[in-house]
Length: 176
Image (cartoon, rainbow, N blue to C red; front, side, top):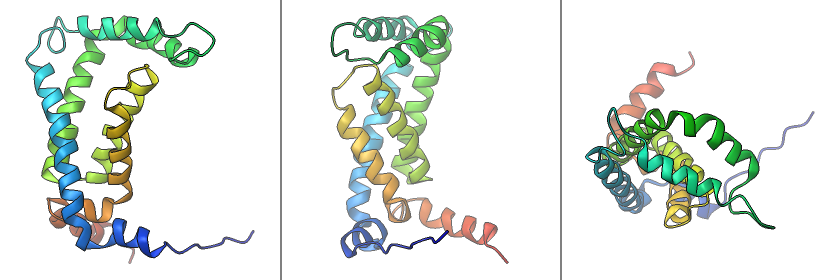
């Protein structure tokens, strides 16, 4: 089997690999990170989202999503509704706490510029799940920005902690 190697275009190389674009990615990172941090922070101080008795808000969210499964062109796919019904709805307290902690961690990591590609992946994954649940709002925009941060992982944390951490990890795991 022959493996073909394709070169990046100059435009892709510039935006996703050139440190000159790190200021652009800093702005995107700070914006997305702040939005995640603010969302998680609000939920952290709300007993229906976080704590021992959390889950009321998530229960309402899931029930709303389950209500969007009908009609000729449903907003929520049957397989995702089944996941929500079988795995999320019975454990809304746990899932609700996970949502809050996840939003906070993604926000902090993006703002600090640490493991930007990984934290952007988890942020985009949460946005994707919100979209699957039939919630549009700003989720498509945040999903797209998350994917762009993932693609630019080499330079998106250049003005951040990744500047110091990634070279050390590269050295640690470098083949000898």
